[in-house]
Structure formats: structure tokens, C-alpha cells
Image (cartoon, rainbow, N blue to C red):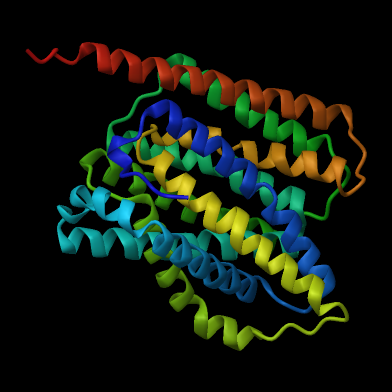
Length: 323
């Protein structure tokens, strides 16, 4: 997979990238739960391995597509070095906080509660940050879509089976949401300025995230002890490849051209994907609440996707035609 400079990506394709990324991310929580059940790896070590594996995969992709990548690198080279260093550092640390705290929340308070609190808080933080720092306005329709999305999340968590809601798990989920909000807002801000490259951003963010997590992962324990070590290795390879390498490359490309609050709602595809996995593969029962919550979430995602496409089309039509 090659990455196009974000500023040159059509909004419609950016929306598609985000939907695929959200579906891929939705599988990570279930994979993490299986890793916890099969080994003694903790959330920090799991995050470390996902970044290390994702980095190896993306380096291979970058090498294969080196010639095409050189043709696209001119815009990215124009980005000032200091701004690039700040962007990549903040993105890498934000990613490390996002996923490590999320995996910790899943470990402490369960997959459903950890996912819903993280993704339910994310749109609120991003909407506030986008208005404060980026001057983005959703309008009444957008606010209604965000409200519909939050209602869908509430139905999913309140209508499900009783869960053990633990304060530490909620705190970790809130920290995860803060990390998610920071990388979403920063990616959008840099995408507006142009000159960013999704593959380069993902690669360096993985490097920074892995380096930041290394001492904590070593302290937690890097070597997994499991009766079925092969299964654990396969799960780690999957987490590195699909929700990490693929998911983040698509996410950074799409988030650079789509409004921040819209990104946060589109990414609510993640709990929909997680619910589908729970029912289809893990044998969980499809309840009326799960169905209703999923319908509300998909309705919100669809409404904002169409609104974003209309906004982009209107912006293109308002540009003066060249003679």
C-alpha cells in the first residue's frame, strides 16, 4: 500500500480510508483480549509489539514502493524540519498513549466498557478542540449526528450484559480518548497546511511510540509465557499488520482531509466492527440493544459522510476557475 500526500487526497477517498481503518481498529480489542487469555503479556508490551511489527511491515512496503514514493515526496520535503519534528513526536506519543491506555482499559474493565468510554469521549474532546483550535463548525446537522452517535454508544453499553465498571479502567479509557483526540486534531491541522505524507507520518510515529514504550514494556515483561506460543505470535502478527500498519496508514491519509469531528464520528465504525466480531466469531448473542445501537451509529456515520462530501463539493465549486 502506498501513501499519497494527504493534501492531494480527494475527500471521498479519505472518508473511505477512514471507514476501512475504523473497521480494522475494531478487531484490535478482541485480538488483545485473546492475547490476554492466552499469555501473560500486559497492555504496554502488547502496544510495543504492535508498533514494532507495524514498523517492520511498513518499512517493507516503503522499500517496495520506493520509486513511486520518490515521485510524491516533493510536497512533504517542503515541510519545515522543526514543525515536522514536533508533529511526528506529538503524534507518536499520542498514539502510544491512545493504544496503551485503551489496552489497559480493556484489561481492567472489559472490552465493551473500555471501547465505549474511549470512543464516546473522543468525539466530545475532538469537537471542542476543533472549534477552539481549528475554527471548525459542524452546524445543526453535524451536532445532531454527533448526538445520534453518542446515543448509539449509550444504547450499546447500557443495553448490554452487566459489566464490571472499574474506576481505573474508566480513567485509562479517558486517557486513551485524550491521546486519540490529540493525534486527530494535529493530523487535521497539519493536513490543512499541506506537505504531509501518510506513510512517513505512520513510520516515524511507530518509531517514536516504540521508543517511548520500551523501558515500560521491559519493566512489565516482554517475553510472553503461554501454553500455545504459536497462537500468541499469530495474534501479535495480526495486530501489527491489520489494525496497526494498514489501519494507521489509512487513518492518517483520511484524517488530513476530513474535518476533525467528522473523523471522530466516522471512526465509531470501530465499535460496530467489534460488535459484529463478538456476534459472528465469538458466539455472543445479538441483543435488541446491540442492534439498535449499531443502527444509530451507522446512521450518524452515514449522515456525516454525506455532509462532508457535500461540504467538499461546495468548496470545490466556490473556487475561481482558471483561465
